[in-house]
Image (cartoon, rainbow, N blue to C red; front, top):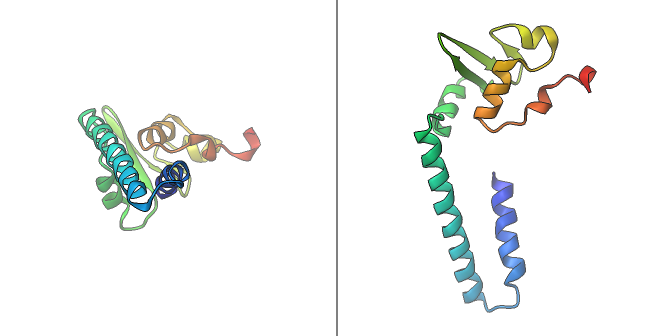
Length: 122
Protein backbone atom coordinates (compact mmCIF):
# COMPACT_ATOMS: atom_id res chain seq x y z
CA UNK A 1 0.00 0.00 0.00
CA UNK A 2 2.77 2.45 0.89
CA UNK A 3 4.67 1.63 -2.30
CA UNK A 4 1.60 2.39 -4.40
CA UNK A 5 1.18 5.75 -2.67
CA UNK A 6 4.84 6.61 -3.23
CA UNK A 7 4.58 5.59 -6.89
CA UNK A 8 1.54 7.84 -7.27
CA UNK A 9 3.32 10.80 -5.71
CA UNK A 10 6.38 10.18 -7.89
CA UNK A 11 4.18 10.14 -10.99
CA UNK A 12 2.78 13.55 -10.01
CA UNK A 13 6.27 14.95 -9.45
CA UNK A 14 7.59 13.66 -12.78
CA UNK A 15 4.87 15.45 -14.72
CA UNK A 16 5.28 18.68 -12.73
CA UNK A 17 9.05 19.02 -12.38
CA UNK A 18 9.22 22.04 -14.71
CA UNK A 19 6.77 24.04 -12.56
CA UNK A 20 7.49 26.28 -9.54
CA UNK A 21 7.41 24.59 -6.15
CA UNK A 22 4.08 26.19 -5.16
CA UNK A 23 2.43 24.71 -8.24
CA UNK A 24 3.94 21.31 -7.47
CA UNK A 25 2.49 21.44 -3.95
CA UNK A 26 -0.91 22.46 -5.30
CA UNK A 27 -0.88 19.68 -7.88
CA UNK A 28 0.21 17.13 -5.28
CA UNK A 29 -2.47 18.24 -2.86
CA UNK A 30 -5.17 18.10 -5.54
CA UNK A 31 -4.11 14.64 -6.76
CA UNK A 32 -3.92 13.18 -3.24
CA UNK A 33 -7.25 14.75 -2.25
CA UNK A 34 -8.87 13.22 -5.33
CA UNK A 35 -7.26 9.85 -4.62
CA UNK A 36 -8.34 9.86 -0.98
CA UNK A 37 -11.94 10.73 -1.81
CA UNK A 38 -12.05 7.83 -4.29
CA UNK A 39 -10.54 5.43 -1.74
CA UNK A 40 -12.99 6.54 0.97
CA UNK A 41 -15.90 5.99 -1.41
CA UNK A 42 -14.55 2.53 -2.30
CA UNK A 43 -14.07 1.61 1.38
CA UNK A 44 -17.59 2.74 2.32
CA UNK A 45 -19.04 0.67 -0.52
CA UNK A 46 -17.06 -2.38 0.60
CA UNK A 47 -18.22 -1.97 4.18
CA UNK A 48 -21.84 -1.62 3.04
CA UNK A 49 -21.42 -4.79 0.97
CA UNK A 50 -20.46 -6.68 4.12
CA UNK A 51 -16.69 -6.77 3.84
CA UNK A 52 -14.73 -6.63 7.06
CA UNK A 53 -12.99 -3.38 7.91
CA UNK A 54 -9.20 -3.65 7.95
CA UNK A 55 -9.04 -2.53 11.58
CA UNK A 56 -11.08 -5.54 12.67
CA UNK A 57 -8.77 -7.88 10.77
CA UNK A 58 -5.71 -6.45 12.50
CA UNK A 59 -7.35 -6.77 15.91
CA UNK A 60 -8.15 -10.39 15.14
CA UNK A 61 -4.56 -11.03 14.10
CA UNK A 62 -3.03 -8.98 16.89
CA UNK A 63 -2.19 -11.73 19.36
CA UNK A 64 -0.07 -14.04 17.25
CA UNK A 65 0.19 -12.21 13.89
CA UNK A 66 -0.61 -15.55 12.28
CA UNK A 67 -2.75 -13.99 9.54
CA UNK A 68 -5.75 -16.12 10.46
CA UNK A 69 -8.80 -15.26 8.41
CA UNK A 70 -12.31 -16.61 8.79
CA UNK A 71 -14.68 -17.44 6.01
CA UNK A 72 -18.37 -17.80 6.67
CA UNK A 73 -20.21 -20.54 4.86
CA UNK A 74 -23.57 -21.03 6.55
CA UNK A 75 -24.11 -22.89 8.81
CA UNK A 76 -20.37 -23.31 9.51
CA UNK A 77 -17.37 -21.04 9.54
CA UNK A 78 -13.82 -22.05 8.73
CA UNK A 79 -10.63 -20.48 10.01
CA UNK A 80 -7.74 -20.18 7.57
CA UNK A 81 -4.13 -19.69 8.68
CA UNK A 82 -2.21 -18.40 5.70
CA UNK A 83 1.25 -18.26 7.25
CA UNK A 84 1.20 -21.88 8.38
CA UNK A 85 -0.98 -22.98 5.43
CA UNK A 86 -3.82 -24.42 7.47
CA UNK A 87 -7.58 -24.56 7.12
CA UNK A 88 -10.12 -26.09 9.49
CA UNK A 89 -11.43 -28.35 6.70
CA UNK A 90 -8.02 -30.06 6.39
CA UNK A 91 -7.85 -30.03 2.58
CA UNK A 92 -5.29 -27.22 2.45
CA UNK A 93 -2.82 -29.24 4.55
CA UNK A 94 -3.54 -32.58 2.85
CA UNK A 95 -3.41 -31.48 -0.79
CA UNK A 96 -0.95 -28.56 -0.44
CA UNK A 97 -3.34 -26.71 -2.73
CA UNK A 98 -5.72 -23.88 -1.71
CA UNK A 99 -9.16 -25.15 -0.80
CA UNK A 100 -12.36 -23.18 -1.36
CA UNK A 101 -12.05 -21.51 2.05
CA UNK A 102 -8.51 -20.28 1.37
CA UNK A 103 -9.56 -18.91 -2.02
CA UNK A 104 -12.54 -17.12 -0.43
CA UNK A 105 -10.40 -15.67 2.38
CA UNK A 106 -7.78 -14.46 -0.11
CA UNK A 107 -10.44 -12.92 -2.35
CA UNK A 108 -12.13 -11.18 0.58
CA UNK A 109 -8.85 -9.62 1.72
CA UNK A 110 -7.33 -8.93 -1.73
CA UNK A 111 -4.50 -11.44 -1.36
CA UNK A 112 -3.07 -13.28 -4.37
CA UNK A 113 -4.03 -16.94 -3.92
CA UNK A 114 -1.40 -18.20 -6.39
CA UNK A 115 1.33 -17.81 -3.77
CA UNK A 116 -0.28 -20.63 -1.76
CA UNK A 117 -0.15 -23.19 -4.58
CA UNK A 118 2.59 -25.74 -3.83
CA UNK A 119 5.55 -25.99 -6.23
CA UNK A 120 4.45 -29.51 -7.17
CA UNK A 121 1.47 -28.07 -9.06
CA UNK A 122 3.45 -25.47 -11.01
